[in-house]
Structures are given as C-alpha cells and as structure tokens.
Image 1 (cartoon, helix red, strand yellow):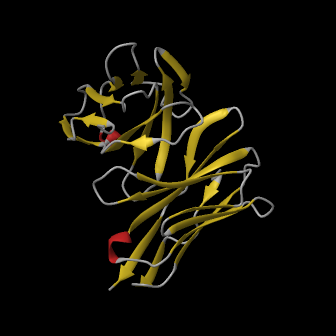
Image 2 (cartoon, helix red, strand yellow):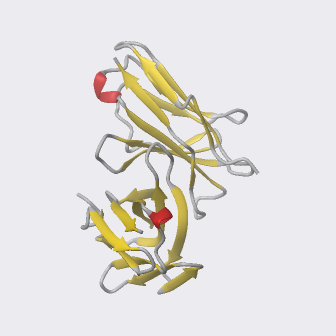
Image 3 (cartoon, one colour):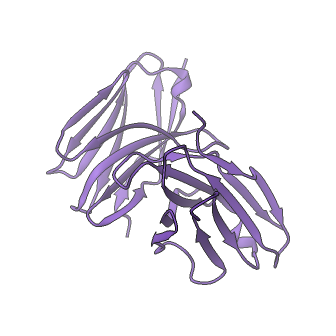
Amino acid sequence: DQQVKQNSPSLSVQEGRISILNCDYTNSMFDYFLWYKKYPAEGPTFLISISSIKDKNEDGRFTVFLNKSAKHLSLHIVPSQPGDSAVYFCAARGGSNYKLTFGKGTLLTVNP
Amino acid sequence: NAGVMQNPRHLVRRRGQEARLRCSPMKGHSHVYWYRQLPEEGLKFMVYLQKENIIDESGMPKERFSAEFPKEGPSILRIQQVVRGDSAAYFCASLRSEVAEAFFGQGTRLTVV
C-alpha cells in the first residue's frame, strides 16, 4: 500500500524554465510534508517543507504548494539550473506516527 | 556544525557475518531514523529511535536486525548473519524533535558477497 506516490519517474526540463514535481498521498492523517533532493551515492538533502495549515511555502527558487482537498503537493523550481539535476523525493508524516513515508522519487534532468 | 555522520561509508561482508552500521546525529538531535534503499527503489523506513528508546520498529525485519540509540554514543544498526538480499544503502537521519525536519547522513553501502 503506497501512501505517497510520485507518478512521474522522470522529468526533463530546459535550463531557466520551471520544473514542477508532483506528489499525491492517500493518508488523510498526514500533516507535514517534505521534499528532499538526492544525488547518486549521497544521502538525501532536505529542501523545503510545508505544514498542513499552510497551502504554500517558498524558499528562494523552491516553492511547495499543498492542496489538502486533492491530497496533492507539488514542488516548483524556478529557474531550473543544471545543478538541480537529481532525484527528488516527496515525504509525509502525521498523526500518531512520526515516521517519514517516502515516494519512489522523480529523476529531474535540467538540460543546459 | 557537523552534519549527520555515518560510518563506514562502504562495508563488505561475507554471507553469515555481522554488519554494524553507525550513525552520529547532529548536535542537539535526540531522534534518529534508519532507512534502507534497495537498488532502483525508494527509501524504506526501518526504525525510529529516541535516546535509549525504540519508538517505532515496524519496518525492521523480525529476525537478524536490531537497532539501538544509547544515552552516550552513536546509534547502531546491527545485522546478524547477513545474506545477499541485505545488500543495500542504509541511511540514517536525525531530528531535533519528532516534529522537526530530518537531516540525512551520506549512507553506508553494504555489500554482501
């Protein structure tokens, strides 16, 4: 039972354009969401998070949007840079369960 | 301010040996997660610990795997009698509290030969 889904295994974007990575969840108890970036042979790096009391959080080039009614969140990267090329993981946590549940990741490739 | 430190980075074990993976959390962090990533798969939760307590071990295999986070020293993930299927990247993450962001280490890549 996959509670956090990233349905696009990969995404290719031109440098300077917007990258939009999507994530859906099924567990209505989730109330905190995080995005991580991961390069090969390295650990995930925390990017940005959002609490369910908000619908948007912005940090520099990264913005996360949360649509609770649709159980959907997205990460926007503007403008995209070649160094953003990595696997992006969506994660969620909530209720009495403090473990982070991860999606399977989306490989973002930003072409120069 | 040092990040989460995991060692060793690479570990090779023969089938039947024991593997010990260490994780030193960030300063001031008293909570630790362990995750496993198999090739071509995402991050799978194994165990969540606070100092001297196991909070959630629902992702840990019932046999051969154990974890601890003592009052002093690093968190240890221990795998006894390793098998080829244990080959994976094992990541540790630490948090200041159960509602904070989790910061990951570089991982330990275990290869069982």
